[in-house]
Structures are given as C-alpha cells and as structure tokens.
Image (cartoon, rainbow, N blue to C red; front, side, top):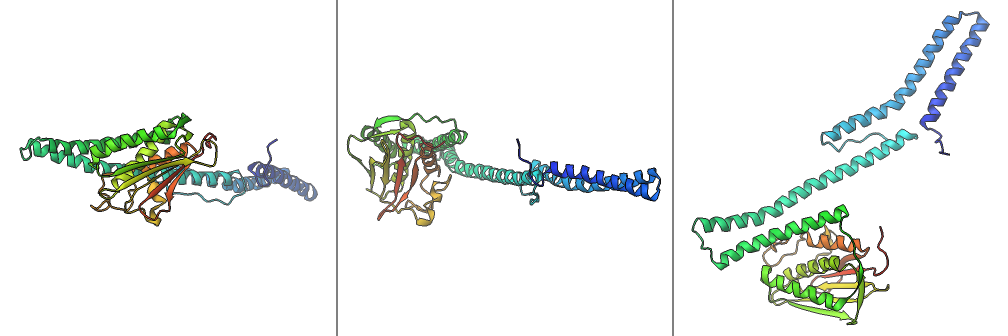
Length: 345
C-alpha cells in the first residue's frame, strides 16, 4: 500500500470533509436547543463550509498557478523563474522537482548557447583564412602554386577535424557509440597509432622534427578495451603533445599493466610548456585550449579544443579515468582503463 504523508493533499481534503460535518452538526444542535429555524442553520452551514473550502482550495491552487506562470515564462525562453518550496505535501515535492527541472533546462540552454558561440568562433578562423587564399588566387594576387594550395589544404583539414570532432561528441552525448571491448596486444596497436600520428604530424602540422618514442612493459602486454575508441584517445593525446612540443622535442608514449586483470595504464608525455595546475581540470572541457602557447601565442596552434574532451568521453565509456599527472617537465596525461571489469552503466 502507498504510504500517505502526514500533510498530504488527501489528508487535507479528508480534514475538510470532517470539519464541514462537525460544523453542520454543531449548528444543527444549536438550532435544536435555541429553536432556530433550520433554513437559517443551513445557510450558515453552507457559508462556513464554502469559506473553509475556499481557504484550503486557495492553498492548494496557489503553487499550481505559480508553476503555470513559470512554465509560460520558460516557453518564452526565460529559465530563471523558480517557484516557492517548503510545503510538506505532494505540491511541495512537485515544486522541488519543478525547480530542479528548471535548473537543468537553464543549464542545457546555456550550454547550447555556448556551443553555438564556440562552434561559430572555431569555424570562422579557417573559413576566413581559406576564403582569403582563394580570393587572392582568383584576383591574381597569388598564383595557384603548390605552396598556396598547401595553405588552403591545411585550412580545409582543420575544418574537417572540427567536423569530425563535433560528430564524435554528438554520438557520445546521444549514447549511440557502442563499446566493442575485446582483448588485444598493446605493442602492435600503439605502434600503428604512432605511425599514423607521425604521418599526420608531418603532413598537416609540418612537425617532422618531433621524435615519437614508444615503451610497452612488458612487450607482450595485453589489454581489454575497445580498440577503435582507444585509438581516438591515444591519437588525440599524441596530436596534442606534438603540437605543444618544442623544436626537435620528444613525445613519449608508455603503457603498462594496471592493478586489475587486462587493465591498462597509458601515459603520453611531451616536453612542452606543460599545463598550469589551475587548468588541469578544465583542460578536458569542450573548446578549452588552455593558456599554454606554442610559441606564437595562446590559441595559435590551430586546434579545436575538442581533442581532450573526446578523449575523456571515450575513457568514460570504458569506466576509466583520465587526468594530468605530475611531471618535472612538459605535460603528462595518464589514462587508466579497468580492463575486463564491466564499466559502470
């Protein structure tokens, strides 16, 4: 049976009926003892019952009218309205739930506005650069030589990376990315990731001076994870390390066994300026590129600020953890995957 709260609406309505009956009965007794006419007593009884009903009805409908006004305001985009709480009945619980829903909607609306603003900002730079290059070619200011076309290709690749990152985050947010975890050998897997990362660094970034080093201990190490999702994590971490590396720098990728069966601890370390302690939590937020520079000033690396966010979401899918580890030089990102243990749902 459903437990009735001490001050529930059902209790209040029952009290209304009982009090109305007592009032009517009392007035009838008074009428009998004072020989007052029954119709007078009936009128007084009706008036008393109506006043009592009006009092309780106002208390019950007042928060509903307040919620209706707040809902109308939210329908017009105003999510700042809240309703009063403190009642000890079902309407009090409804008010608390309503305020929580309003807060969630306000946060979602704020996130949507920030997302649109950030995406617009990220798209504007490569589109403007690409447009300038093409206008110079069309106007005859620049020749369509390999160097000019390479500049246009670089901006096009940057646009492509941004679109790919947004699609990945959209799939992750909607929960449509399946986790196909299986056991695999770590050394050949990471070797393939590093080969791809080296080709991309030499192509789109022109960083053929950065040395990529791989260390897997033991060499026959095996892990249990989704190789495709883990490839996203490793590729984004290596790409981030390469673009922040100094000239002729080194990016070290290491892997070792964790504490659980088939678990994995993956670390990527560069020799760049590192991440300030105040930025170590927010650096995994979307569109956050931190305050570290690449020698050309903050935000000059051409990144989208989405790579580390995608890495975090992919690690979360596995039920693992990603964070900035302490390092005497540069930046070291540590990823811990739980292995064959099922990630939390």
